[in-house]
Length: 299
Image 1 (cartoon, rainbow, N blue to C red):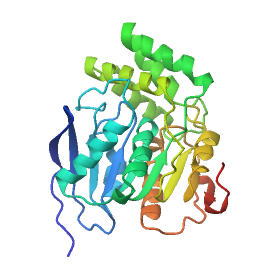
Image 2: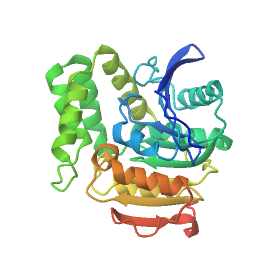
Image 3: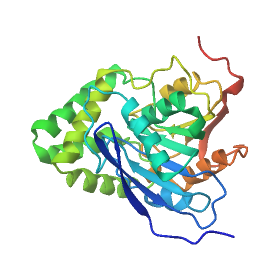
């Protein structure tokens, strides 16, 4: 019998002195393992909107604020993805969840990748969106400029600069004006805690490779991004996918880095198909769908 929908439950967790939070919403008819949504550097557990609602059709949905995110404690920039990855394990243990399907996007993709390396038994399937192994040289000046604005201002320039960094100028981006308004509001209302986390998280990305590919994750991984993504270009996302022995690559049409805002229904459909182990086949909303399992892994 389908479960009755209940309100989201918010819970505090602790690990190694860090306080962090979970937001768990139950599905009326869960047919899949619970789905965890880990977002970008300034993403909050309440920000998932249509993606969270769409995934609730087939699974319980867990939205965390891990160390460095949202309401959780700041994570110093000298620490890598191990602390948030272990925090996610602690969160699952606290909630009594053995195994999940995990979506991790943008900045959060390094945490998803690290968790798949260290605790593959906790992940059924993994989707990584808008990711790459390291920050390209061409992107570093823009990111350093955004950090400088967050640290010293002028404050009114930080929001527009952040929006321009995240969004492609391509005219075909889906819901471009709406997404721009959402981002402008988010960055425009950022408080000092948000800015401190943005600075720490961005400096973390600039100080090291985002992802260590020396030990590929032993779980099935779907890599995806928008065809017009200028922050994490599609070719770099696909390049990272090729380092994994059991991987797929899907490029979404009419989208850039912000696929969860621009094409939420299509992202939900893609995740649902992949988590259910259904064939991806021809996706009307994709410009590329590749099964990379038969492509030799680079040495």
